[in-house]
Image (cartoon, rainbow, N blue to C red; front, side, top):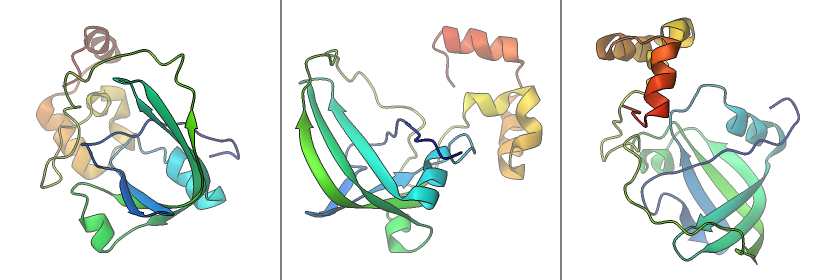
Length: 164
């Protein structure tokens, strides 16, 4: 976190952000890059801003509030594959001008969204040979099973849109 705000894209299956009441919403934290910049900022400062963009209409909605991390319990269990759940007490909500939002369509969901039992493919970067010493034992085993790749291969695969 280093005391600076962090801006991170969060995605999931439709409905992954849940409105629990007019002033409370939740969303899951799935396996990421292990840096915990978003969660670190929440743990340190609690104040967050969220930007919801509907690229098909286009529309934008901003939400601000104070967040807390939920590490276990029924709410975490209700999101298969979630490591944590972020619960936000909403302080402000407003519609934001969408004039510069590029209009796009959703062709497919990310293949990395955990399925109904919480399983998802291993992230391509976790297969990098130079990253093995920072992975968990479980991720290291999955990377070895999928096959390790070099940084050059990684860059080529990403540039060609081959993310699995």
